Image (cartoon, rainbow, N blue to C red):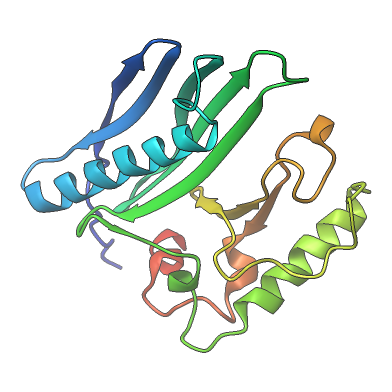
Length: 205
């Protein structure tokens, strides 16, 4: 059997947004022969980093300090999945707040991939994924702030080479002390609802 050829990983490097009391490292990408896709991804990454900075309240006074970084979760087979992380602390607050966003791209086009894009048109992916999350909450005995019902249709996520990882914001599901709750779901458990020839299929083998 002839193996399918996949695009090479993109090169990820850091740019820094640096201002008084602010230093945020923003991922940017380079790839040969795909200028428009590369520019589209870089604009999107920068825009979402700036939006996370705004959530901290930076600029509304001079008492907030902000730092930021990122983690590359997947960079292969024409897919790039990145977790942006921004932390802000305002003088006098009981503690700082961290904000995260998962961004997953088709590196061939530079387009963002939404959670819905991973599944067949009309698939009940919200219900299916919610069942997986509810099962993990029970198995891990997580002390939810209120009974969990279901995820949002645009629930934050990122991809790894063999998993879809859903996550929730601080205070959204669990007490602050537990940090961000992550729920990894094997791509092989999504066979019945995954989009044919979609991103999950790309990672299948």
